[in-house]
Length: 449
Image 1 (cartoon, rainbow, N blue to C red):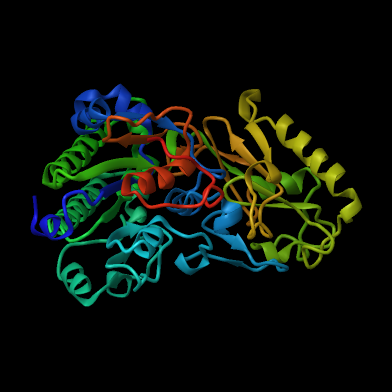
Image 2: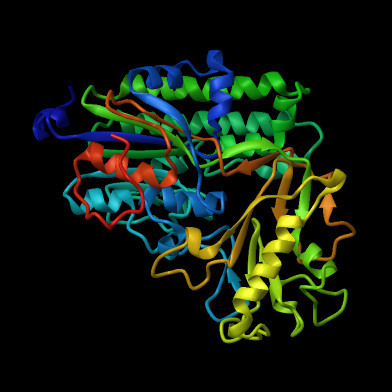
């Protein structure tokens, strides 16, 4: 028991959450030798697959996981969102997240929280004990608070994210080395502040797995050149989690969770190219186009990544052409077209097409997409406003893509039941473990304890 345990009293509930961007549960289940720590956590408590958020993109997922609210409440739907009443887009940052995060609820309850590298948290909040924001922060110097944390991180090998450009090279050796160094430095920093033992809630996120999966999943799935290096990376991640677990005081409950699953990518799919060819979208300036702002008055629908489709609605979009009275019929027409959309060899692109009201509810749903396509395995849905020679591109540098199914959750508590769960259930579970009260309608998920 640490000094702060004795000062606070050992009966004060405390929780450590280690987030992993893009760890699929199936990878753990299929490779138990690489994941002894996660297997041990499941044996001590429970673990299993959970569903992600719609859409299963990291910028949308992390606000959902850390708040327990759907994107209609968080106000974040992806790496790029549309301004209300405009075709202008922006990259959501921490201040764009409209829902209350789990560490804010803990702080309001008088607890101390250390939050490290959670995506979509820039700039760092000064209302928490310490925070370093995750991607898309500009640099460590601006991303860390307070000064002691900033000085330590800027003077160490700590990195906010892996350099994805290295993954585009045919020789992946430098990319793998960079990802491993990023992982190791992240774990060193986490261990340093875990061992401070001065917090009630510790939240730390490993984001390198998402990068590794995007560029090496094909090697893993098909026993390619970097198959062993892929598994070695994950064995190192599990070893780091094991070291942190060993360093935790006995009164701390550990939860490990990921944001989405992964599968083999076969084709980058340019949704706006498809819409243009199918007569849904046109541009004002011929072939010299490249942005949402370039669509013209004949456009009935457009798309933003990943698989978000918007009706160009009169009164909502600045140059909307679809009358409100025709919204339902036009959306149904587009939904039918998306459900019938076939890729190479006749495989359906869409696993299912989800209407906005099914998954988005809240005070910040003005920019919610009208339809979201959850794709079948192999089809990674891009926006593709620039002209493309083909709708389906099989030659991109990435070989792995996100999935809605098969995110992972492990809870080191004997009463945990990880079944029929999704990303919305993580925050209520953490709050339950912390014994922090919240209203019945405050969260969209439910505790798994």
